Structures are given as C-alpha cells and as structure tokens.
Amino acid sequence: MRVSTLLTASAAGVMAQDAISAGPLTGSRGNATVTINNPSNVAYVATLPAAAFDTAAFPDGGNVKGRIWAQSRPDGIGVTFSVSFSNLPKTGGPFTYHIHAAPVSASGNCTSAAGHLDPFVRNDDPPCDATLQQTCQVGDLSGKHGKITADPFNVTYRDLFASTDPSSAAFIGNLSFVLHYPNKTRITCANFVQEAATTLPSGHKGSNGGASGTSANSTVPAPTGSASPSKTPASFVTVSAAAAGAGSLATRAAAMGAGAVGVLAAVALAL
Image (cartoon, one colour):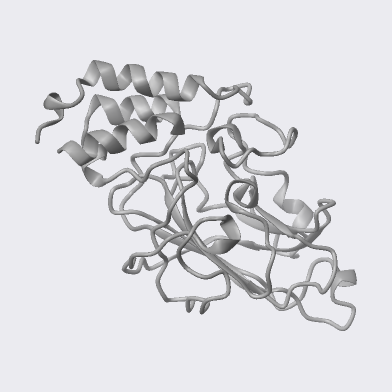
C-alpha cells in the first residue's frame, strides 16, 4: 500500500510538528534532534580501566568492570548502545552514567571529561524526563534509558539523538563516558575508540530501562560481540530504513526532533 493512500506528506509534516510541539522546549538551541544520516554500522567502544578514579569507592583497589558499545544502524537513524557494568560499589546507588563533552586525559582524571554532551545547551537541571527524550541532554544516557539499579547491569537500547557522524554536534566517537554517584561524584570513566562493527541481532531494551525484552542481568556481550536494536519509550517508535528514505519527511524529523518519529514510523509501515 502506498503512503499516499494513508497519509500525505503535508499531513505527516503537520502531525510531526504537533508531536514535537507538545513537549517543553528545554535547550537554548532547541530540543535534541533525531540523527538520521549516521554512517552505517560504525562502532565505538569505551572500556573502563582497572583502577577507579574515585579510590574511596574501592578502598582495597579495583574498579567497576564494564564498557559501553555504541554502533550506528544500517538505516542511519540513531545509535544502538550495549551497556555492561559489574563490580559496582556496594553502597551509594542507583548510579548514573553520561557521555561527556571531552575525552579523558592520559592521566585518567575523570574531571578532564568536562560536562555532559549537551550541544543544545539544555544544562543539567531540571532532571531529564525519560518520556520526552528530545528535551534531555544528548549525553544523558541514564536519564533517558534508566539508572544503574542492578549488579551486574546489562542493557541494550537505541538512542535516537546520539551520532557516529564526525560532522554532527552529537558525535560521540571522540568523547568519553563517566559513571557517577547520584551526588555527581565521578567514580570512573573511559574514552570511546573506534572498533570494527558487528552484526546486530534482534533485541530490545533491558528491564533496567522499564521496557520488556533482554534481561537486565543477561550475559554481558563480549568486547567483540554484538549489540542489539532496541525499544525506545512508549512515546517513540523505531523508524525503519524505509522511513529514512522518505525524503522530506525524514529531513523534517531531524529538524523537529524525536516527536516526529512516530509519524515517520507510520509512513514506513505503509511503504
């Protein structure tokens, strides 16, 4: 069935605009926009070091174990994250983690990572509303997808606003992530480095993020293993490659932000 029998391009644009207008505007440069032109299947991984930055969290030595694998999708829309942590501090949670705006220095000092990746200048407060992810900082992964509430903690999801395109302000490939206590004390951190992409099997966001699918305590993917596609919150719908090829509609979605995604998904289903 052709799109024209269900939804004209102009009607889709109006619906998409209404969807994004329904939420608050939080960034001085607008809300975050969906990334739709990420180079296909480009992967970056950030693996935590053996020793913690906050030695008080591990008085006997050691560190949180784990990594974040980030890979763009064949459709170029958003980035799939596979997050794996274990050996967390025994007290002080739930912990948070964010992509930061700078790489960690060679000394391993996590303060060198600067603040959160925030190209739309939204700032840290008020807290991220996970039901309106376009209003959150691009780097606030735990705010959008769930805090660390289990040990081990394993979750896979698609983030629509991160990018693997070096020309994008939301590019993560030359940055870092930091794992925090709730009071923002930095426990540990790691830089993203490029890796060979891997095949993405089917899968959904783990139970730590509140959606059904992969268990929060399932097997941690190996460093060269696979990441999974994911289910975003109820206010979002995964967009297929057909939607990415919907020309002006996909372009408008990028300009308007994640509120347009549900409309584009409906268009994709009609193709």
